[in-house]
Image (cartoon, rainbow, N blue to C red):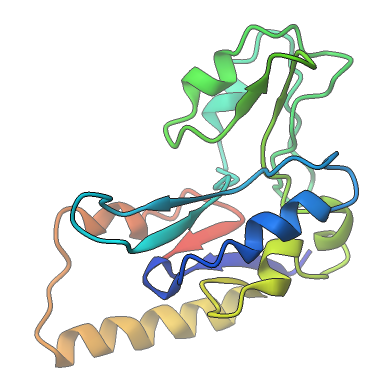
Length: 180
């Protein structure tokens, strides 16, 4: 896999097409594995897409006592294997982003797998393939670096300095998802 997911939160228009596409993905059994949330519901209607960050050293996998969460050779963090998952929900508590969800009816954990059946062949995950505002993109790493440099240059021209809150977005510990 030569591509990564790239998120630009401020581009999100709240259409939730990504959620509908996620439900339609082959092995998702009609469940959404990504989310659209409000930046600050009381102040604005601005939304942002949220999905698994596919961390290089994922906390969800580290805290799983059954070793049910696997990481592919490409770095994609997969949902818990049904055969191994014991339903302890450590992954849901361990993830700093609150991504893994637990289905009590089916007694299993699920999260974004970056549509691994598609992305391993460099085909965009369902959410990225339908996003009308390009808030979610499946692009080459070099293209992502170019976009980030351009964004930094624009911020410098406009005199905007990254706030403390923005700095987490530039931490390079994530494999498959980068945010700006």
